[in-house]
Image (cartoon, rainbow, N blue to C red):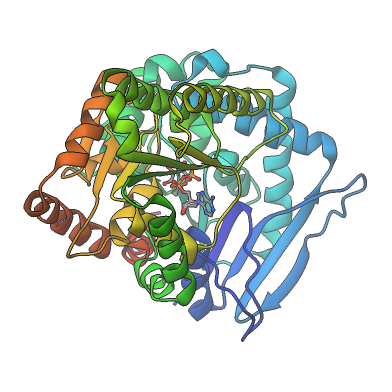
Length: 461
Ligand code: ADQ
């Protein structure tokens, strides 16, 4: 069997055998795929260094080798904070109003992709399967080809692919997409993003596209694009859910909410997650039905992310202000309607928090998939499951059709979905949850990895 090489911006260093703690989610799944094949994982160390060594730092632990490189502060600014997170991230989440277009950061992005290609190429053996992840590394496949690599190269995009009309606002968009087409297999989270991508290839590049197989032919070369909806590490998540820590977290929520229903939101503090809009929906509910303040407590867990970027600092301020306003307007002497928490939680704690919350409020404006929606479903008590309110603009909405699907831009729709969730009879909650849970259990992270890698192995070169 060929060895697997994973390349992603950040690398999860495997813990030494017997060390406490486990890697969750994507990191855990990739480690599980890498281990049996003594695979290699290449990425940024997360360190900034004024004189970064040109050779990667190589380490082998528990069957997985990691090769990490430090980046110069200018590279971090231009590649990571700049092009990846201030140009591609907002644009791909349909936010051209927040997208920054600068030649310097574009150059930095290309330079760092070259840097990774130079670092990774000598470590890759002829029949290795190479799997590159996410928007940080769209041109990396092309750069590896330029180094003479003939390997099968796969790419998975964790975020949405934007409609053609938005993408063409990006200078050099054609160059970016032509580079992406140098991979042999390109994976998207759902058919909507895949369709946008195929549309671009036809409309802007004049490629020939077979919509049934996802084959794209351009200048005599064919590559394949398909949808592979990512799932959660179901077994691991359920195991964490059986821990004492999970039970304690559940009890803390139950004890502190007493007669009120807990509604939960868990998101990185990111403008794509629709957090201010979510609060508008809640405010509309309290405005129209002030008595609901005594029925409901909304717990929003939002650990800050990408704090060096201005748009992230602004979303944090907006959220603090809105939470303060709503709590100021609707708090009573014995209760506060919103608990806003900025810290991270362990997987076990999150399981307990989800389980104690009878409404899951997941309303991103755009999201590649959204794993919180799936974790919320997995954590529910089958005898008394909660209700998931889910944005129709998350990739997850294509699979989780039994959730209450909402338009996150409409405070009226959000307000009405919260009331529907609070009033939903047990029988309907169970019927919906059974279907949702089957999907989350079966379409999990292992089946996702197996399905992508299976297709990559079969890809024609
Ligand atoms: P994210 O935008 O980070 O991921 P999401 O899919 O919801 O979004 O994953 C977040 C993960 O972080 C979840 O597993 C969640 O439990 C965890 N998390 C969030 N808040 C936490 C907290 N306070 N403490 C601990 N853990 C917390 C990107 C894309 C998504 C896509 C994923 C995977 O934007 O659309 O689903 O990658 O492909």
